[in-house]
Image 1 (cartoon, one colour):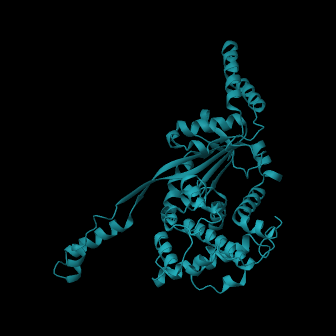
Image 2 (cartoon, rainbow, N blue to C red; image 1 turned 45 degrees about the vertical axis):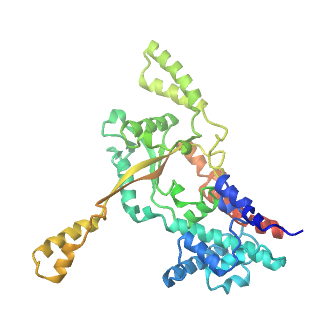
Image 3 (tube, helix red, strand yellow; image 1 turned 180 degrees about the horizontal axis):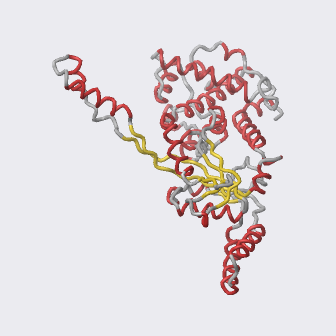
Length: 414
C-alpha cells in the first residue's frame, strides 16, 4: 500500500515533543535531532544554533570545541583517563572528522543497519552533547564581570567578619554583646571550568545560567544555636535580602525548625517565669537544638550529597553594579579631541555616537550560603560525606546519563 504524501505533514518526532512540551532534557534524549538529508540541512541547523560555518573564524571555533569535547570525554569518562570510567575507546572515525557538519550527519543517520555505524551514531550524539555543554559554560555573558561580582558579594560578608584581642574569629558589628563566635569563615571564589562542565552534564537544566554555586560562603559555628543566630544576623543586617532568596534552593538538614520552634516557646515561657540567666537559657536552647537534629534527607536536597551532611543551605541573589570603564576613558579622549577640533581624527572621535554603550550594567547574580556547627562540619568533611565522594558521585552520574545509550547498546558494566 502506498503512503499518501500528505502524511509527511503529520510525521512527528515524539522525543523532540517531549523536550519542547514535556520537560525532558535534551541530554537525556536519544534522537532529539532531526534527520539531515544533506550537509545543507546540517548547515541550516548550525545557523539556527548560532554558528555560521561558512565563516572560517566561527568554523575554527566550533571545530576547536569538538576537539576539546573528545579530550574531555577521554579524561573524565573513559578508563584511559579515569579508573572508574567506561572500558571503551572513541572510534577512530572521529579523529578523521574535519568539520562539525559531518558529525551532525553521523549523529542523525538513523537508517543504518550496520552495528558499527549504529555505535558511531551513538558516539556522535555523546560528543555533540558535551560540545553543547562546553558552549553553555563558555558563553555565559556574566562571566566577563566575574571579578566585580566576586568583590561585591564577598565585601558584604567581610565587613562583619571580625577578630577580638585574642585573635578569635566572630561575626558582628563591633558590639561584643551581639558577637557570634565562629570556628571558620570560608569563601568559594570560583568553580573550575571542568567542574562547571561536569555539573552541567548531570543537571536537568543544562545551561550555565542555572548554576547557583559558582560563588559561595560557609560559616562554621561552635553550636547549632549559633548557626541559627548567624541566619538571623544575615537578614537583620541586610547582608542577604530575604526577598532575593530562591525558595527551591533552600535546604535545612541541621535543625528541625518546627520541632525547635515548639520547644523554643516552651523554654522561653519557662525562662520568663523563672528569670533564667542568659547562660542557662542558651544551654537549654542548645540541648533542644541537639534533640531537633534532622535524620532524614528532605525532598529536593542534592542527590549527590550524603544523607549525613548537616547544614543550613540557601541561595540568594545580589544586585551587581558594574560601571563601564571604557566610557570614563573615552570621555577623557573627547576632552582632548575638543582641543584639536581642526584635526580629522579629533572630528571623527567627536562624531562617534556612544549613546548605545551602557554606562552602568546592573544584574542579579546568585551565590550560596552554608551554615553549620563544628560537630556537623567535622562529620561533613570525613568519610562518605566528604567533598571527594560528592565529586565522584557527580561524575559517575554525569557519565551514566551521557553514555546511557552506549551502555545499553554494548551492555557495558558501570
